[in-house]
Length: 201
Image 1: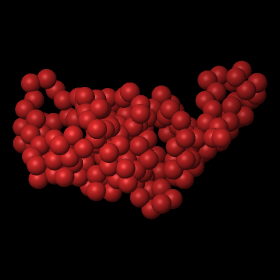
Image 2 (image 1 turned 30 degrees about the vertical axis):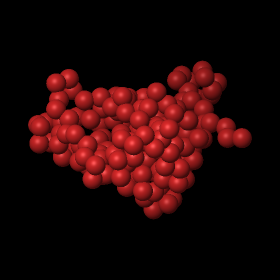
Image 3 (image 1 turned 90 degrees about the vertical axis):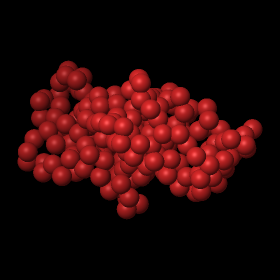
C-alpha cells in the first residue's frame, strides 16, 4: 500500500511551532517530493499539479539552499531521474498525467512535449492536453512529432490492444485552437492502420 505525501503547512499554527520549524517542515516535505520524483515514485507523489509550484518554492525558499539548478530543471522538464532519463520520459513511461498536465496547462509554467500529450491520452485521468502552435508549419511539425511518438510507444507497448483502445477513447482530450487545420494521419504508421482496422475491439 502506497501512502501519498501530505500537504504543506500554510501558517505557523498548522504545525504549532516557530517560524524556523514552519520553514523546516515545509522544506523537508519539499525534499520528500523531490526525492519521490527522482525515484519515480509517482504514486507517492499523487495529484501533484495543484502543488507543483509550492514544492519548487519550498525546495529553494532561501538562497542558501543552493537548489537553483534542480528547480530550474524541474521547471523546464530536463530533471534527470534515478533511471538516467528526463522527468518527461518518466512521465510518459509511467503515464503520470497529473505532472504532464501541470507542464502543459501553463498554470505554473509552460513546457510542451508530445510525450506529455501522449501521457495524458494513455492515462486514466480526465486531464486535457493543449498543443500550442505559432503557424501552420509549426502545427504540421508538431503533428508529425506527435504521430512519431505514438508509433514509438505503440511499438514498445506490450498490450497493443489496450494502447489502441486508450488512444481511440481519449484522443478528444487534445486541445488545439479552434480553426486549426490538423495534418491528417496516414497509413505509414502501424498504429494508424491498426486503428482503422479496429484492432482494439
